[in-house]
Image 1 (cartoon, helix red, strand yellow):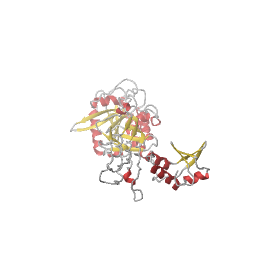
Image 2 (cartoon, rainbow, N blue to C red; image 1 turned 90 degrees about the vertical axis):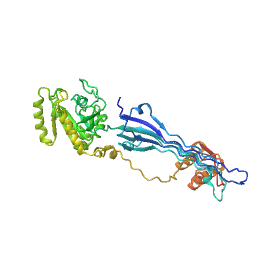
Image 3 (tube, rainbow, N blue to C red; image 1 turned 90 degrees about the horizontal axis):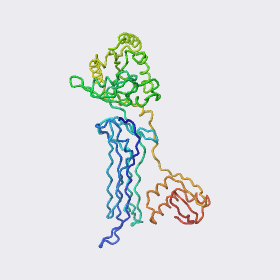
Image 4 (cartoon, rainbow, N blue to C red; image 1 turned 30 degrees about the vertical axis):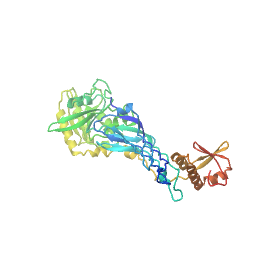
Length: 436
């Protein structure tokens, strides 16, 4: 089974907690703080492995969580950082943030990698809070939480040559003749519902990868039929071989077929109209094919006089070798990077972000007799600080006073003993004091 789209959950490892500890050696009086910092949480890293061809693995495993860092130790020893989690993905994978639509990365070459979820920083131990005024602090931080997000993975087949055309024009048969691939072949539309890849060996040691892509129909750029599931893969190919049923065995006009498919490619991505294209006039072994070919050349010559039209028959292999030689010659003239630069999502889904600034804003609401404070800065502080010490509570009180929260509480009517709540943390307001 070919899987070309998946959605996974990734989470970087949490940082290790800092430690409150003191030196307690026999001959070292008043040894001072000795609690180390926590270790860094592991990152989740996606790395390209050219041995993979589908996203099948992500159909069964959808959650990836890195390990958390170790806690800080005594004797001023830091906790160990966690190892990064490496996730292997096939070349040609586009990673998209599910919430924002931002393209995180477009990975095409073996060994390329990107951090999709950063691990959290380790919490600081009490050695970090020592000052001349407070040489023995009982204050430490929790580790920072690792980044978490849902990531949509879209695989665009990395093939040199793509076979496009209406259903049942002979694309799968052509691929099976020129390579070792064995795609499903049937006498009905949409026999091919997923891309098939094959390595084509041309004489003189030349070779390239050819993809038999699912058949297109009118309206595909709007999602009709296989729609975008097909068109996504055309963008990666450097040369397009447009297979046309020149015998008209399906009762369609070959020229109309060619026009409609090109219109769908252009409407999906305008750059595809400029991609080198060869028309493979297939089924030339059948009656009426010669007459249709002459008429086709006349009509196409008015719009695209430079278009190459090569008569072939996948069944009898007539003209197939010449087609492969011509495709190989075109590939030699086109750098690999050319197709990779023309990815529409990179421009269409770009998200602009402002530089992060410290948010000192807050709001206060009432919940029965309690006042509820909403503040991103204070809530983040509560997550980081280990609120089991008097010094941590003093630090919280100072921060709230400097932000003007306690003045606002007084204006709202808070008096001594009033309950104040921030997230899950609840305490009593103390009037006339510099702390709560």
